[in-house]
Amino acid sequence: MLVALSTAVPLLVAGAVIVWIAARSASGSLSRNSWIGIRTTATLRGDEEWRTGHAAAVVPMYAGGIGLMASAAAAVFAGEDGAVWAAMIGCAWVVVCLLIATVVAGRAVARMDADHPAS
Image (cartoon, rainbow, N blue to C red; front, side):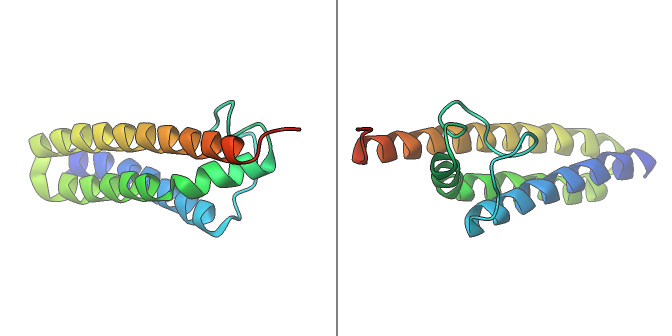
C-alpha cells in the first residue's frame, strides 16, 4: 500500500495543478509569468497572444490534469504492481495532452496573427 500511496499522491497533486492552470486559463486570469503556462515563443510574444493561446488550449489541459488524477485513483486501487502501470499510463497521457495543448495554443496565436497582421 505504501508504493501505491507514494505513487498516487504526486500524481494527484500534479493533476490538480494542471487543472488549476486550465481553470485560470479559461477565466483569462493566468497572466504571463516565469513559472507556469504554455511557454512558447508564440505565447510569450505578448499578453494578448498569451491569453489567446491559453484560452484555446483549455480542453486538452483539463483532459491531461483529469487523466493524471484518474491515474492517481487507479494507482491506489490497483495495488503495488498496478500502481506503477497506472503511473506510467497517467504520465504518458498527460504528456500527450500537454503536447496537444501546446500545438493548439500555437495555432490559435498563428490564426490571431493572420487575422490581425502587424502594421
